[in-house]
Amino acid sequence: MDAWNFLDEVTAMEVALEWEREMKRVMEESLWGDEMALQDKLQERSTLMADKERMVADIEIKKKLIDDFMVFMEAIENNDLEKVQKFDEKALMDAVVTMINGDGSYGGNSGGFD
Image (cartoon, rainbow, N blue to C red; front, side, top):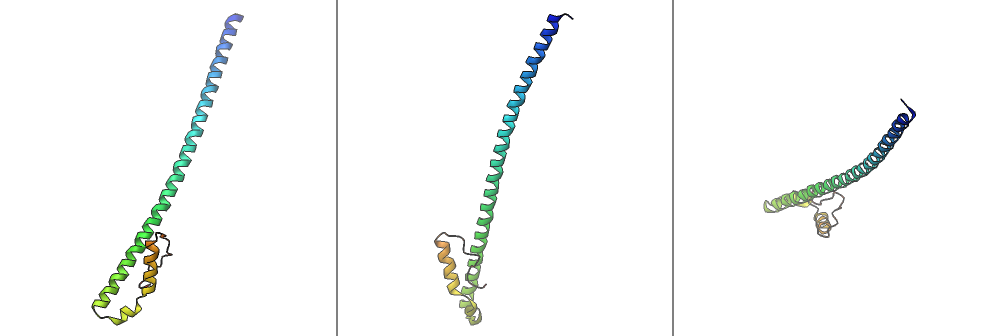
């Protein structure tokens, strides 16, 4: 192998090495971007899950409010004074007003028979 062939091979290897370094840099940048996108999606998922939990809790509170009110109405229809007297109308009205105002965070107190 003469000096010119050796020099050509070294130059070719340097070019290949530089190409590999550039490809590594591009792939690392792509990985960084993908990791950032993944973090964004994980944060979005976490937010959506928390929103879902709040909505489900609000629905459960509203169901309890309606169920308690129906028990109260049945007690009135059946003249069951004991159940009627146990019913907390003020708490029920407070819960309804809070719900209507759209606050949604009425501390789990649905009024009625707690």
